[in-house]
Image 1 (cartoon, helix red, strand yellow):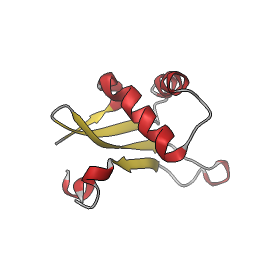
Image 2 (cartoon, helix red, strand yellow):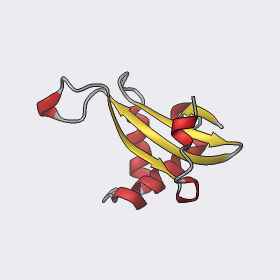
Image 3 (cartoon, rainbow, N blue to C red):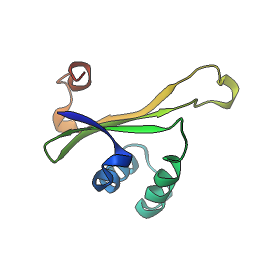
Image 4 (tube, one colour):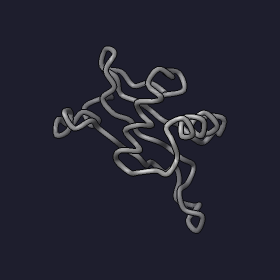
Amino acid sequence: MEIFNLKDKSEFMEEVVTLEREEWGSSKSVAEKVEKLKEDFHNEYFEKLILVEGEELIGFISIFEYDMEERKDLKPWYATMYVKEEYRGRRIFKDTQ
């Protein structure tokens, strides 16, 4: 298993966005969310890391400078941690270093 920055592995972008929409919902289309994600990559404080085994996406996590306007002192902030259901319970992110 390997960890990559999604901006360097754009072939996984639509899959990540689709999984986010299924898990957390969104009124935006996949195409709109992909464009927003591409914009986010220009922010030096944003990262979306993906865990991949071979050509299979296992999961991902997002890192932001902060997530709440009223608590900008809490940083960095991680969010949208997601592991595909078939890989859950295996402690994958804990054991990947």
